[in-house]
Length: 370
Image (cartoon, rainbow, N blue to C red; front, side, top):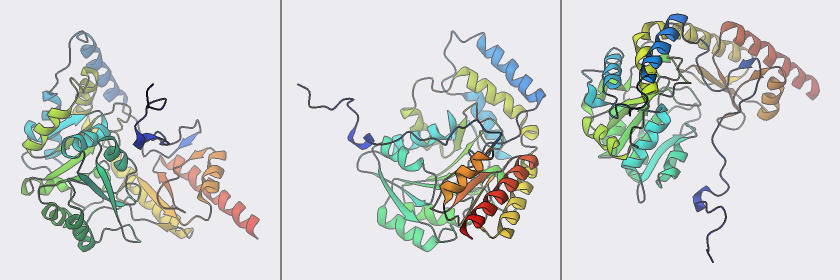
């Protein structure tokens, strides 16, 4: 008789819940940091034609090295902080989630540690768990900044194989100081330092990308996604820039033909329309800054944001506030430290609806407490 339980789930997964933000059918959805502006008719038509052409050869496997796509991504990044990036420096996969998991599969594993600093992206410990890597979390400061002396000491203490740091950070929106990359890459030794720039295109003017110092650090990895600024969340395309030996290591752990011909075609077409697809980024930055100012004027604590979302608190009963907003047709995210909520930046009309709903909820809460 088998001693395994039914179903024979790994011990580390017993009691775990699948990751995912609530998906509710409400008029204003501001919970998953999507770009509220979809591709234009011209971009959509080009993507559709590229996919049609790819469909004619779907009886054949796709280019397993995604050469054309990686070359196009290198060209794009060389215009946004990259310096002389080529095909050999680029890797792409199904969303930055798969990129991150491949990094942990290649450089993590039993007997190795992954380190980040909380609060941070909630999927990081799951990547570690799924790759049998020990997870260690340091702490950020009260304003969600990173104390570099403390962070350096933590890296030296833990000796992680992989350090995961988003900039801008999710869920707080805070960007790393420019000197952070050098400090952490030097402290990590031969450990890999991953700067997750999923929201990098939304950073404020003057905030550098870690791509600018990539040639100086062989252990630095900079990840990006097309889900946010490019408005391609449904296409699932993430990528990274790193030293060629890191890219080659990921080719060992990737699944055969992991990136479909349809995905490659759609991403290539989108890159042809990059200026157009990124055209709303400045408007979203302005709306973000206006939202920060408005929330502070209402008396909320608000984290400085370089992303397309804003974390705000302190909320006495954040779930009650979240539910009251849902009841008014506005969905935001219940995430981050206790007492805080996160709102994605939508269109001006969506943000006005959010503000009106939050104003009503606060008035009801204050009336009930009177």
